[in-house]
Amino acid sequence: MSRARVWRSAGACAVVAGVVAGCTAPPPDVDPRLRKAVQPVVHAALVAEVGKDGGMLGDSAPASKARWFCAEKVVEIREAQDGVLRVGLDMACSELAVRGRTLVEGTGIAAPWVMELSRDGKGGYRVRHQESPPDGAGYDDWIGRSFSEGGAEMVRHGEWQGTATLEATARTHFRLPPEAPVTQL
View 1: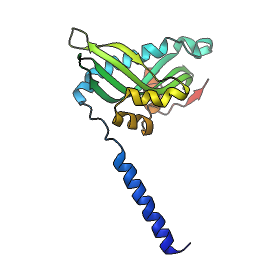
View 2 (view 1 turned 135 degrees about the vertical axis):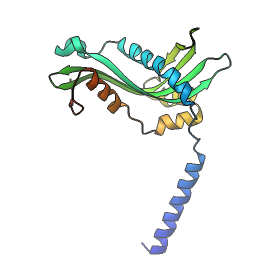
View 3 (view 1 turned 120 degrees about the horizontal axis):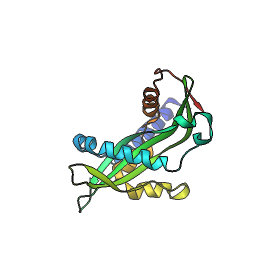
View 4 (view 1 turned 45 degrees about the vertical axis):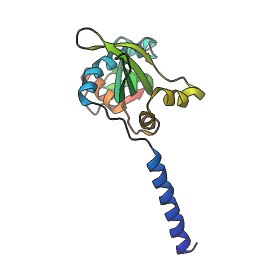
């Protein structure tokens, strides 16, 4: 291939990349104070919701110490007409227990999630409704309907991983050293 052809190809790729980058929606701007106010409510609701179905560790040796741990990233907060907040987030949850000096992982989930919150009358918030995407073909359509354009872009192409955070929290909870390994059940 000639040098001129290589440069033309590289130039064409750069133009395409520039067009694609220019067409993406900007990420949502989330008020840090509002995020701080809703984060504990969102976190507690996630842990409660994923814990409803039990998990794999219920039938294993460390079951008495099994617990769900979640980490979440608030992607966007949109206010509806009636004052309800729609909180869109990325989440990761794992059922973890301790065996010796090791974390044992049972069931886990990582998915986008949307919660509707309203004022609780005490200056805080309560969860009115929550939903996650369906498995399979409707997954991407759900993201497009449930998030703003910029929020959907972040969820679809984001690099956020909450696993390290929830594992660090589990190590602290179980009083394990920071380098304690994680194994699958």
